View 1 (spheres, helix red, strand yellow):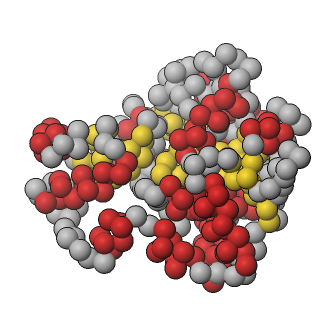
View 2 (cartoon, rainbow, N blue to C red):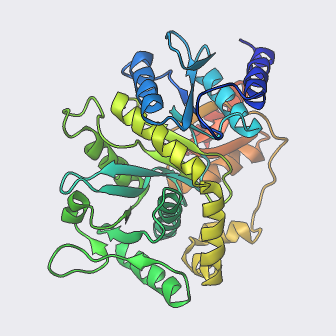
Length: 388
């Protein structure tokens, strides 16, 4: 299937929707796409989750993108993961999908995912902010952004006044002071108390199991470990059977609703992720993010971020040693192995040599994206410059 075929298929779907296919349900359905290629468990497992989600959520229309399955759901053929992502992105941009669920998707720096799990202590839902991606290259700044992302996701899913706790990891006390300063300046945030006898907004491991807050703020690498544990602790680790997946990629200016699954996600988690994606679309998560940032900026967010940013990032924003990018290209090749703190410098090293590149965060860590024809040269330059 080439790009012309993709556009034709998407156009046909849009026309079907515009003409009002009879479904037996009143009102517009929320359309959630699911790519089914790339799973360690096979496309049939993801399809089973899609069919479960469709049966349990009649207000959602699930659109499957992939190959090698037979289903009564709407199916758009894609030969591989790359083509599936192209179709998914196009449909989201054109509005023929409201949200999507996929695997192995690279987000830009500044975007990270808010996971959602069921805690084993009391069966409560817990939002983990965040689980993949990188909100910022400075730890405390990233965790502050994660807080806003988590609040926006929880509100989009119907929690009008979600409670917030901060996991007891490096930087937690700084995050606590910063958030309390924002609250004192008028940002409406509700902190919870640890279930342990000494209380406080800094959460212990017990609070994870109990689901003490609605939103647990952490860094994305810790969040990634936690969501894998919550999702697969009953199966021995090779099959994720509980929860809603890694959640949506959220950023201040990010304009798509794309939820992420692990390659080990089983049908129950796939079904949960689709339901989560549908809730986010109906709850207008993108508008929620804008509204949340508008509120926090009134409380001095920009000034606070300026004080916390690492000096190199601040200097670059001021224009010190700034290098203009070469003409933009479509970047589809990933280069892994770059240290997160060197990522932006590595991109500029490529720009300086005339190679267009962008930074991002893949499933296994920081990545640099280049055009296919530039990848080998880019790797040589990065090795020469000691970034690889």
